Length: 479
Image (cartoon, rainbow, N blue to C red; front, side, top):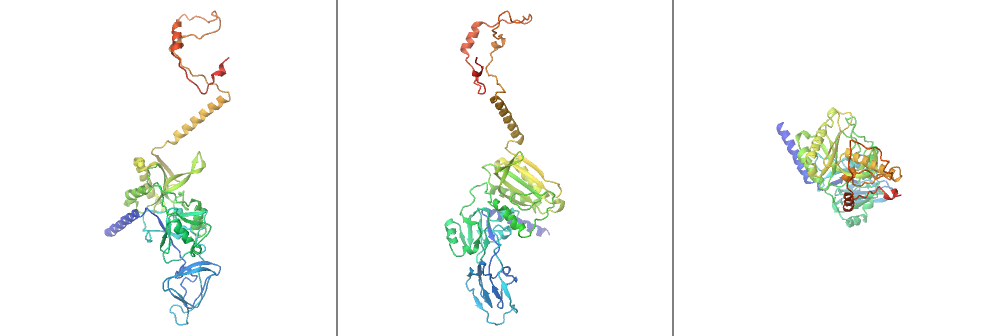
C-alpha cells in the first residue's frame, strides 16, 4: 500500500513538472472527424462493408478522408464534396464473393456533420505540441477558455478530414496558428493561401472568419481569451442544444466565475495587479508551493486574465477592467464540498498579504461557497490600495466643496476676504466715522493705550503682505 501511494505521488509530481514545462503555449485539438473509417460517422454505428450501399446526402457538403481500400455494392455521392485518399486507399465494386462479417447488406448513411460547432467546448481537448493528450493535473479551464483563444495554436489531426461550423458573434476569430494535415500554418500569408485552396470551403463554414496572426500573447500579465462575446453561444452548445445539464452543486449558493457556464462550489479570487505582475510565473509558484501539497490533492485551479464590468454605488459601468481570476474547486462531496478549495484560497490570500507587492499584486478579493455554508462568504485583502472608506470620504468632501461653490455662484453665500491680522491690530479700536462723543462707555478695569502712530506708518510701508482669494471679488464691496 505504501509503495502504491509513493508511486502515485511520484506520478503526480512528474505530471506537474511536465505541465510546467509546456505552459508557455496552449494547443487545442479538434476532436471529431469525418473519416470514412470512423464508426460514429455512420448511422449503423459501423464502417460500411461489401454488401452495403453507401449513401451521402446529395445536398450535404462533405470532406472525407479514406485511409484504406473498400469494396462496396453501390455508393451515392454528394453534389459538392471531396474524398481524400491515403496511399493505397480506393473504392472497388463488390464482386459477390464471401466477405466475413458482412453477411447481410443494407444502406449505410453518412452522418450529418453540419452541427459540429467551433464554439462547442466538448469538441476540443488540450494537447501537447506533439499532439499527444495533455496529462491530467491540477489545472482546468473555464468553459470559454476550452474553446481556442485568440493566442492559441489549433491542431486538426493529421490524416483526418473534418467540417466545422464557425458561426460567431464576432466577425473575425483570431488564432496564433492552425495545423491541418500535419502542416502548421502560422503566418497570415500561409493561411490565406490555404483558404484559397479547394479543401478550406468544404472544411470551414459559417459567418465567422478564421484569421491566423502568428503572434503569441505580448503581455507578461497575460491576455484575455477573447471569447466573451461568444459566451452565450458556448453555453448553448454545452447545455441548451445538447440537452446536457450542469452538475447539481452541493452548496446552496454556488459561485459563478466569469467565462464558466455552471455554478461551482469552492472559491474564487479576483486579483488587481501592477505592471510587475507575471501570470506564468505566478501560476508556476502556486502549483509548486501550494497545489503540490498532499493536503490539496483533488483541488483544481483555473487562472487567467478576464475583463470584469465595473460597479460604483451599485451601478454597473459600461467599462470593464482587467483582473486575474483564480477559480478553485475540489472533489469533496456533501458538506465537505469546496472546503479544501476554501483552505487553499485562504493560503493564497495570506501569501498575498505577505508578498503581494513583490509579486505585482495590489489587491485580492476572495469569495467562497461550500457545502457547509448557506451563502457565499466574501473576504478581501488590500495591499497598496486606497480603502473604500477613504474613497467615500473624498467623494463627500468633493460634494461638500462643490455645494459651497454652487451657493457662492448663485449669490446666496458670501465668503470673507482673507488678510493677515498683525498683533498690534488686535489692540486697535476699529475706526469709526461717528463723532468722538458717541464711543460707548469706559471700562475702568481695562485700559490700553493705542499704538503709536509712527508704528502704524512703518507697518503699512514695510509689510505689504496680502492674499488673493479666488472666491472673493473685492470690487463688489467698493462704494
